[in-house]
Length: 421
Length: 203
Image 1: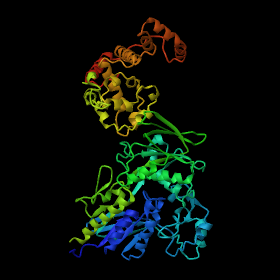
Image 2: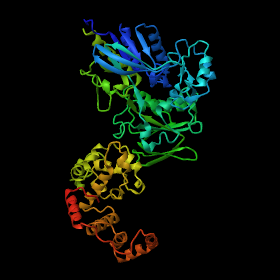
Image 3: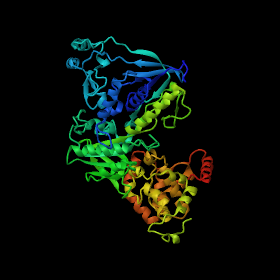
Image 4: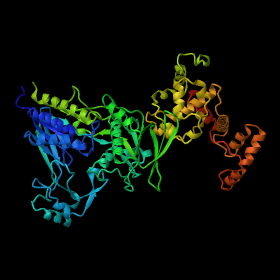
C-alpha cells in the first residue's frame, strides 16, 4: 500500500486527445487529475481536423463525449492558457509550477458576443493558422470547451479595451488580470504536450511561406472544414479562387536526414483523406499525390484501395525536388522524377499541399532528469522513467487511435507510480 | 568482377548481379554511400544537366545495383556533373551524389572507359596546367584543349570563339601575356602528388 507521503494527484501536461484520454482514464479509475493546457480551449489538434481517417467522421463527436466525461467527473480540474513552468522533487512527491496567462474573461461569460461587436482590432486567427482574421475579443472556435471568450493582450490597456469591457453586461471582462504562477503537488506527471507540423519553410526548395498557394496539410484541414476560414470551400490563399488541380507532396520533411529522419506515419493517410475532401468540392477537381511509398498499414490499406479507385486521383512515385511559382498567376510548377517511368515531371497546379510530418513538442531541459528521449526527441517510456511518462505524439508520430491507446497505457504507468502496490 | 558472358544466363528476364555493386563499394571513392540510396529521384530532378544525361544520377545508382557494369562506366552522365551540389544538399539520405559521380568518372577512366572524350581531354589539360603553373592560364588552357584533337579542329574551334576572346581581352578578363607559375610550385606539386596517391581524385 502507498504510504502517507505519496501525493495522489496526477498532473497531465497537454489537453489534446492524448492528455484528455490519460486524464479521463486515470480519473475514472478514482484518481485526482489536473490538466494543464496552453491553448484557451481543450482538444488540441483534433479540434482543427475536418474528418478522421479512415471513417471520414467528424472529430468533434468524440471530443464532445470526452468533454461530457470531464464535466461529470469532479476528480478532474483543468487550467487553460497554462503551461508547466518547473518541476522539482521526486516520483510520488513532485512540486510543480504552473504559469497561467491572463484570459481577461472570467467564468461569468455567456458567449453573447457583445464584446466582439464593439471590438475593431483584428488579429490573425491562430485557430486557422492565420488564413483569416478574427476580432481581438474572440471565441477560439465554435465548439470551444470551455465555452468562453478570450481578450487578446493587444487591446488591453487601450481605449478600445475599455469599450470592449464596458460592452459586457455580465461583468465577465476583467482587464486587470495578471499572469500568475501556481505551485501544486503532484505524485506523477503525464507529458502529453503533442506535436507541431514540421516547419516547412526550412525545406527551402518548396517555397512554403514564400508562395501563398503552398500550404501544409493541417492548413488544408481548416480549408476543408465547413466552419473554417473559407466555409469548407478549398480556395487558394492568393486569389480565393477554387483550387481545381491540387498536388499533395508527401514526405515534406519526413524521411529526410536533413529534416526529420523518421517517417511521420500519418501523412500518407492524411493526404489520401484530403484528396477525398477535394473530390467532394467539385466534379472537375483533380488531385495528384507525389509519393516515395504509400505507407497505409493493416486495415488502412482498404482506405488506400478505395481512394486509388477514383480516377480523378493520380499517384506519381516521385519525391518532389522543386516548387516554383508562376508570378503572373500564382500557379505552382512542381518538379521531380517519376521513378517508375524514369521521366522528368514538371506540372502546373493551383494549390500545393505539403504533407508535413509531426515534430514532437520539445521536452524542457528541467524535465529531462525524469524522462529519457530518443535520438529524434521523442519520449521513451521504459524502466528508467522517474515518475514522468510520455503519452501520444510526444512518444512517436501517431494517429488518434494509436494516441488514445498509448495514453491509456501512460495513465496505467502513472497510476502504478502513486499506488505502489 | 562482372563477367559480361554470364549476363542473361540466370533465370528470369532480369538478372541482378551483385558483383558490380561490390566492386563500386570497394573501389570507387564514396561508392559505399550508394547503399543509402532509396531511389526517390530528388537528385535527378535537382540536376541542371539531367536533360542531357543519358541516365539520371538515380538511374546510375539503380544500374549499379542491377550489375550493369559497362552501362554505368561508359555512361556520359558520370562525366557531365558540374559540381553544382544541388543533389548533395537535397539528398534525403545524405548520399554525396557529386562525390560519387566524380568517383565513378575517375574509376571509369582508370578502367579504360572514356565515356565523354571532351570532358576527359579538358580534365587532362586542366591538370597538366595546374601541375605546370599552379594556376589556370585563361587563354592557354582553352587553346591546348581545342588543339588536343588536332590542328584543324583546333583552328576551327578557335575561330568560332574568337569574338568572345576579343571581348574578354577588352574587359581585361584575359591577359595577352602568358601567366607565370605561382610561388612554391614545387611544394604544390608535392601536395598534389600526395593527394593523388591517397586516391580521392576527381575526373
